[in-house]
Image (cartoon, rainbow, N blue to C red; front, top):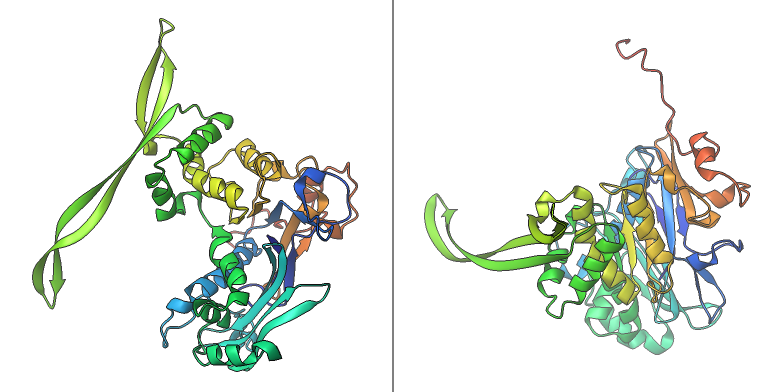
Length: 422
């Protein structure tokens, strides 16, 4: 479960900004809150981020992605391989040469962790991991000045040995876990398995295909058909077929063409089945290729394994432009799935950005679930802030207030009369 994320000096984000999934004190839409029975703290099941084009919504998502991928790729990184995910704020001669900074607060197996690091393309500068075993955080490790480490006295000899196996381009969190250090394991697993970011429904790549191919028991098919049915997409069934293609490829090597018979690719065919009533009132089945379906249908189809796994494992799902190719009511339908405790039994979370103001209603969201991004035009910096920063009544028309500019985060458009002027 994500509690909080902070980022500094990444793309258009110059100054540190913090995004929180901690529920405020409001008592509205309590079904949208995950209640921690141990601490009494409340956490949000979803958040929506609004803002004008180029205001930094996507850069915020990219910051999350960059930090997560840096953790996941750490143990695979070669000694001379740059940390390509690190992209500092470039509109300042100072920050362009400073490291990007990231901090996560999250809960794994009922324990709250704080993990953060700073890095540029060349090396990791600082890193730290704490866990809450009581009201105060307990140190697991700290790292500063690239390779200076601090550990608890009881773990020092063990972790000092692991530190010698780390490099300036690798995160100690990943290295320690790879060497079976138990106290970093859950934190690393959270990054590797419990949080995912997506920038396009259709760009889930091999993930969705792999899930559909391995669905031998049919649980994913059942979930997908029910999802499409509840979304008023009348697909009765689908077929997912995979076959290997042995390609007698010709590979050019030093201008000499060499036959290669060892390359195997997979050919995937997905077809949908529709039950249609003919003129006599009889029902007949017709088949379509998935690519013949609407983009919205295709999007929801490919997103179904992601939703299923999120609900089963309690994952954090982060989606850039969730309304792409989807009707506003379909987006609202997905959001309500996360708010539904009968479906979302394991407290999955959804974080997304959108331009769809039809969703901007306090019937759908609590006031602490709505966030905005705004760019300072003279400095090129992004600011992130919640609706809760404003005095908003429970009965207020938030959509109207947003479009009227009450909360900022909207474009200021010219008349277009001067397009040909110098």
